[in-house]
Image (cartoon, rainbow, N blue to C red):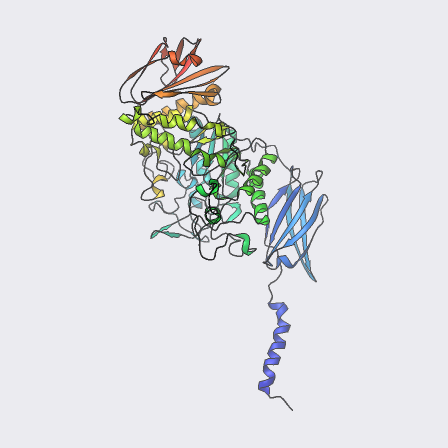
Length: 633
């Protein structure tokens, strides 16, 4: 029986579709290789290449380059990805590796560069001899207005009149003011993240905000072009090193930006922490160290998302872990950074963190790593650093940000000049008590100390804009144990509170932008009060830099009595005494109690004023003042 035309039409369409399918299928290609390059002569000969492109995972790969061996090729759920495990022999020469992928008659090639390592300083580390300055590039200085706006980015605007938008600060601007930091006595610069944040504006409480802070990466191997790109960052680090300044890179492992290129095309479902419905972290650290905690509470802390627009990476996925570790190594080798500050440390998978820390330290033994774990007690803080507590898990992180000491110093300063200053556990007792628990750490000198940062109220506001308290706290910061860090603008009395928004503590540095009415980078542009504060920090910071007894010597502290707190920093070459009067009245301090540290010394020099002290029997301490004395014989 003859079929009708209507019956034959679907069959012919199906045949035509089958013939056209090969033409309609996406062309196989490679559009990304991460790491973007590597080096010969690395201590670990292994590297895992992430290969990405349409149907890149359907290709069969070969590498033909002397000394480079393709050990294994792996695929994942998404056919656009392949992961190639390479080994690079010790005698391999630098050059261009040709990567070839085949699928039948389809042939795809891609070049990948192997570079020679150079002798630039890199991974030098920071120690307790250093003084770190924390700055937010977008808010510090604008050196190149041409990179303020890019129409092809998700957030294309810059508007200094809006505190929630990008303001145009960049790496060139920061580089132009390195001499200012050098003059202040700074020895290391920590910038909030510089990696690309091609993030859309987010609605937070009805206010649209940009990702000017830098904590939502969208391409790990590109420095944000609004900051100047990879070339500007390399130039910044090289300029810093030429002035004897070290550079701390701000790393983020826990999460990425919602616009990250691999979020838009996930390699696999388990690339991120996935929940049946959106689950935010509780921001609670207690379930991690609590021996009685429930599994779900621990999971919510570590695997819950930080905020909805920062997807949470699953570091138990081996490809995710390798990607992050290799990026860390690549960053140090590419740019020559010296230390590694890790954002939201406690929310990461801790075995992964140990593996990552170990990889960095194996390649760069002097590098310092210190993470942010915003906790309120010594036990929880010690968990995330090398410690002496019998935890089931042992961290190998060398250092950490010392939130416990920050809390103690701020609490003690608020009570300075009040009746609480002389109470059983008030005033300086809070500082003493925080330091008295240092026995839990393997090396407390590796903790990074601070009085504020980009997430906290500004220090001057925390102490009620009281200059006496301001100076007292900075004296503690720059004379006690640890690696001191200071937030930009503290030296010129910048102030404000986080409430109503973080933007209030992230205002532009006056003088860093065209059209600013004052230039606080210069003596002439600062008020007398601002110059007094700047000179105070400079005097103490430069003395600390030049006198190892103060920066790296041992610490001995004495129980505060009647609001008077005394401690010593000392080594074989010198002894420095810090005596603080936290009361609202002048005080006499008999020194017989301190014979253990003062025996053999008969005179002193006031480090801050230059005055000579001829008799150490009894010291006269002005109200609400910390006196720093270099003892002499």
